[in-house]
Image (cartoon, rainbow, N blue to C red; front, side, top):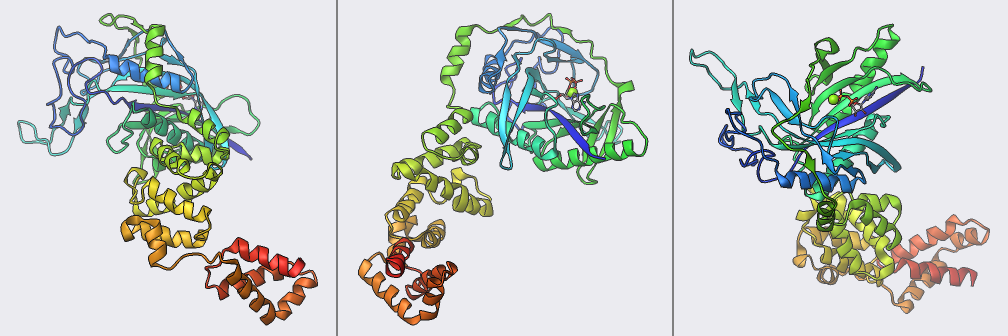
Length: 485
Ligand code: ADP
Ligand code: MG
């Protein structure tokens, strides 16, 4: 029996504002417990929330970036539930009138393009944190402490349609969304600190079915690897359950990374009734068209636009263009390299940035902003390939030396010092070609008898005679001329 997995994601992106969404306390991470909790965050009687303009601007930026509808009027609502880290007993969120509706995100899953429709994005406040470790109560027994530093931190919750069909696609979407919010500068993307966390809604159905199966929701997954494993585990669990004659129950589950499994947290029966209603303390959030235009004007070129430009103006493939626009720093680095090369060499620049450079950065676990080889330095090296001074192969050796900081990462100095200059002197190449043709008459005969592979073998012999330094194009041309011409 063929099964199809259906996934919809809800992502909480913490917005990079200096102060909280409804109070003036700091959002900085890592402070001593409760040093960043104002009267409003502690829900002391009589306090009133005031909307943070910067948080709204983050939401507007996001709406524009995904081509969604930024609502001219949206409502803040109270989501009521009781929990120790929620002193008001309600969370201020948005319910039926979110700030952003619709929009979509396009990204690659491997080399296949995929588009996921977004349902909505809404503003809300984060809750505080319960601390269970190293806390003792007045009687000396273990106790639970409450840290309200995080209470009131602005979040943008981004909800997709149930459009994804594999764990790999869900992870690719989450990565693309992460890249986008970081690109925009509206979220720092730090997953360890909880700035970007996903809830995965997962159901399965038999291939060809048109209605959706019953879903479970896996809460708060904070790494891409865990997201993939949680979905795989959960889909597998549901399929086995159904194949064994059982039915999936709608419930909230938790992914336990150590056990690599999901476990039930609460079922639909004990689901909360949140009794949403508009918060009477906050006015309708009105966003005038002029404000939207002001925000639009302040935004960086978006990944999609940049990707398009890389394709049309620079002639890159859709895949290369999408890889280069996953991160703003990568796009900027690539552009600096491409601009320092002849106009028709953008593809070569892309190959180097996505190939040799990306591999070296990966090995060293560095991000491109900390690359020991700068964009102008890499461009200087690529220019030596373009003008025939070094072959691609020699260039890789030069790059390795640049990476280690040899000669101040100066390509020309390294080429000189290591004697890596390619032989492009046609007289010298002709002499080597003649010698190889004279010494390898058997291979020459094979070639003349129609064995095309023999040609490559002759090229190899010349390159060997030149100790790899002959210009391969010139060698090929010269051999063709001598054999065919
Ligand atoms: P709630 O607000 O109660 O969590 P929603 O209907 O808003 O429920 O859906 C939340 C998320 O679950 C969305 O991302 C949606 O795409 C996804 N979803 C809904 N139904 C399914 C399903 N049958 N299978 C997988 N995902 C689903
Ligand atoms: Mg949900």
